[in-house]
Image (cartoon, rainbow, N blue to C red):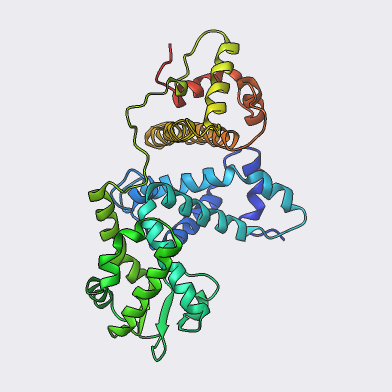
Length: 348
């Protein structure tokens, strides 16, 4: 018997709108995924809301996760015949989507997480720490950790952890190292964790350590201009604008040029071109999410954006617009409208 999410794979794959029963369960799964990731602020996932209580905030992240799922639904369809229970893949897709959004919109916070997690894993593997039983296989925000003699059931409170971090020379003096993922930052995290133990912290919740480090790291990155977010440097690249004409062949040629440049490996231009392409796609996603379009149109626009991203990262031949329309099961004229929304700068 197919489980609650697995049974909807054919519906999702066909492009049909799943029934309300699916959305009720899926919203709950996304909320659980957010809790596992320490309930990141909407802005750190690229969601244009101040908090998750605002109307529409949860719907936006649910929509992002669903779009992430659609882009991978073919793989689930292929596995469905041999694996009757694929619910775990749905949850993993949600986790992966949230992780990718964090990596994209909160790179400094993500770097802190990865570096400190690496330090924790090093101490766990060396037998110098223990973790809560339910989290041994994976370090998450709710994981409880303790040093020798500590009690996993009695972790230090968040204020005590924060105070210990602020008084530690490693965390304070070397904070800049934690803003980028590196082996040296992981080593520093090991030293910082040992200092926590020396300060009297024998057990703590991983979330509390992250909450003590991330805000300061983000502020430092902003002050020193260290944020890895791409910003336009004044180098204009008109290849990211589609100059729309009545001739479909000309439009296909322009789109092919954009995608070829986005996947180029030429060291002289690859960074600027690829990052400008990513920024164009990111802007399109934001405008789609902020629009008042019907759910189906939002979903279809995001399917187009995801397909463009996939093509730009692959070696497959770049198909003409009509072929993409057939692949996504859209009328050709609809695809032309979508191009105009995604690349609006030079539409004529």
